[in-house]
Length: 157
Ligand SMILES: [Zn+2]
Image (spheres, rainbow, N blue to C red):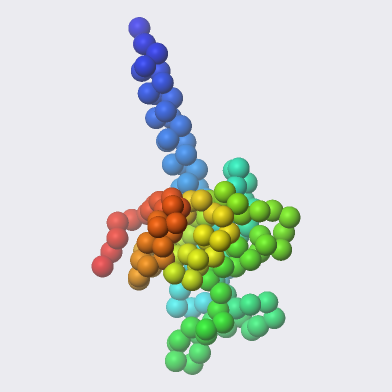
């Protein structure tokens, strides 16, 4: 005989497992999306998901109308290159959707500039699969009460 307490515990577990699998799926999609980037040094992909719907996407690259080249001859990234998160957030701004309460899936943890945009866009959760070289952005997100979830291999130094 299974009592109610056990049943509830099991359904909670199933729910968590389902949510985790969904997170992994969206992250895989963000990783595939990153391949669209013309940047050579680093390709980053982002997805904005709200109510189980993808409402926006982005990858790092130059603004509309600029050549699809991200680095100069010395392999330095041009200052006008937009990060994947910034592209996803500005894309949703031009749509009829709202990023309020959305989850951002991004293949690298956000930098401080993108963290500011994420906070102002009303995004409530950020899932990332790789640590960016500095974690200032993550710390800012956490300070703003945004849930940050790491999904990927252990941090490599
Ligand atoms: Zn950034």
